[in-house]
Image (cartoon, rainbow, N blue to C red; front, side):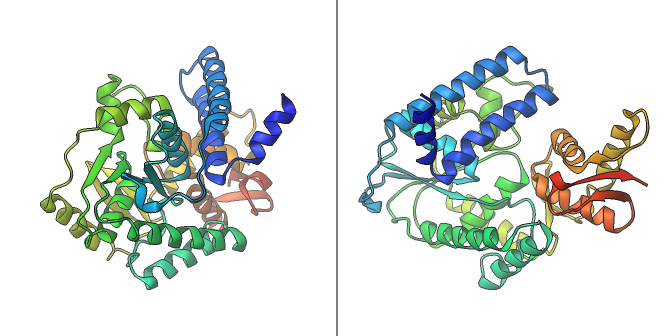
Length: 347
């Protein structure tokens, strides 16, 4: 069986690898940060394992499929929701007639100034390369993937309905407005599937209970229930589309590189917005030590990410930690090549 697993893993696409890895790491984090029990963790691991075996054994591939045969196009923002939705479509036997287009990006961070133009894309690439510890090979791949996604969106046939999946976070909400601006010349029906609101309503989650920060945190089985519940949602009106397009035009004039979601709006904030929070988190971790000592930067970053009610990613937090090191707020031990290679402590 071990050899069979090795062969199955070799055949996974990059999206599929990221999806299953995220599902594992997300549940480990829940054990650490929430009341998620060890028994539930074990049960969910078995479910992920069985989902993996079923997914690979029943996956239908058709290398020569005609793009124009698709009856629905889904647009999602991230590798994890892409993998999860593809699994849902496979279970519904809809993977041949429904296409998933995904942006492998995090729109809550980095410049979005004139992102719908070449000059804006170049500015974003340069900022990510210079600030978020992305090596040149990965950056080149990122550029290719981003450009290909735009090409795929522009190539959607006019008669095919488009379903866009979004949650209550600045990442997906920024991306939504960007995509609707890219689609402004198309007459396709566009349906929005609000995963946060549907998750709360369908699964009776109160305000004090855990809510997924983004669509990628929702399990495939619940994502399917959300999809089925939203099968008859009306498309966006022309007025609604114009409103989102106008919001993008406003957003794309901003030069800030950090966005948060608050009071149902995207707010552009200074990049040092979370610096005090990072410092206070480190101080609290020091208070748990017998003697103030160096801590793995990954520990500090993980604690920050685990307690934020925003979805900004660990790479941005590490960028700010490195900035605080340069400003003399943190002492460093090791080399800041990647978060696993160095430790920090407050001066």
